[in-house]
Picture 1: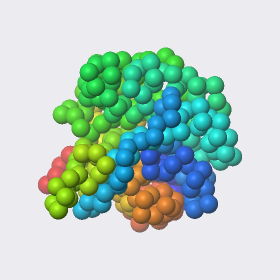
Picture 2 (picture 1 turned 90 degrees about the horizontal axis):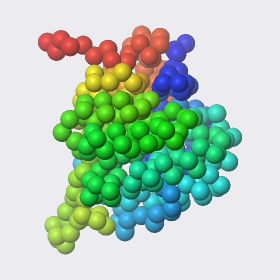
Picture 3 (picture 1 turned 135 degrees about the horizontal axis):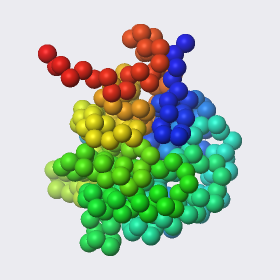
Length: 306
């Protein structure tokens, strides 16, 4: 038997594989396709104070070994989530993490305060890649001071574990990671999608409904592995790796780089049961590499590259 259970701060998961926010709906939509109890956790679609219609179509575009998306943070709003989605999620023992975003610190806090009154959530994941309207539209996650502001405010409002989802579109992920840790984050999700674009030569227009989108999928895995490695060396809190994970071996690579758990995103667009497939293959992979406890892998990358 292989021990697949992991601890992310105070939160204990049955295994290290979670469904990533924005790729798995609110979880309940996949219940007829996936045994939700087999997953380590579900990070639900990002929640805002008020409903958001999202970006104009087309919202998805295939790229070599990846995908561009410009969904525009479409969601039903935090109040509708609590009333319509969360009751069904309570029937499952899988940890449910609420992804939270806002365009100001006050909006982040407002969403959390509503969720604090609801039962059935294991924690929060702050998406700090949103524009900060109080600082000229800059992303919260692009500046250590702004990271500190929003994480400190969220920490004061929350009694549950607080994860912070970092943007990869920065020059120094270590300084951003340290700012989030010092402000009270319990764990870091590394990382969100990469700013990118795709052009139709015939029309000379973007292949998306807006000029740019977020790149995800296998193409970004080597880059994000590096970010996980750098972030894990900069902080003491757990890292949750996210980017291009499609197989159990991908999970093992992220753990060796420094992650304690992972999130699966784009793979769910191809195979809605991708998370469950990876969980089921993970014990077999551990047996192949003679790993009895998956926690023993975290941060074991060898410095000697020769």
